[in-house]
Image (cartoon, rainbow, N blue to C red; front, side, top):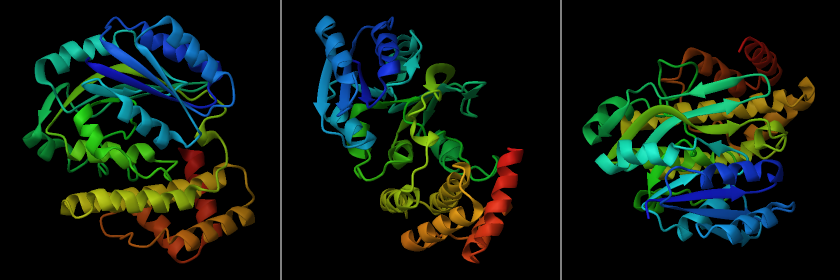
Length: 336
């Protein structure tokens, strides 16, 4: 079997049938579909079972709610395909994705990973995301030269963004690679893709890039994680930073600098989140102060190597200028 397609599912009943149908209608048929019901309280479990009763390629796993990392990991352990890909339960894929990727990359090169294009769908716009790399196979010597120095932080990009868009869903992974490098900390609820995508890239011997849109990333779901306030973000960052440092820190001096920029970016995003959710300046300032203090968010973030905007931002937080930081953040967000 070539592919195992894993769909973690929680509270996506409005979109789930479209998601599953887009997978089962693939022009390529040598795959299994693993639907992981993460204790969803709506009609998702019944929808999964209905599809499984009609198509032998579908397997359903019902489990107690444990979060996205937990659901994915259950799917990985059950997977039998040579390659694994993820589709979120409220997203969908191009009908020829599995076929075209198989013919262009797997059949010819058997790469450890495949990276392809993704489009984010908003109510009023769409945002297409590709790599800045040419189509084709990248073997280890090319990865070392063209990808590793920029994968998490690319100084040519705005703020602290990297060359590799860290979503799990616009990539396909060789099963043996993923079994070694999947995210093992189920406390990570945001940035969980970062926790294993970069580790997989770093440990790949070859990666195939295909700059075509195959994945449709639905940003219309009002239940999506990034749509609502979550006070867990600063604590989550603490878990995420420690996990990634354990997996990647010390592997390479340049990679250590990228991890530093990555941490600065995620602290900034946590601050932006406090402001974005409509809190007053004083309330947001209090949450930011406590979040940074209680989770030691600024520990080990070095200013050296950061872009100027990130340096200023981190310095303001270190000087406890929370109100000033919030006002500056509002200006930045308004001009984005």
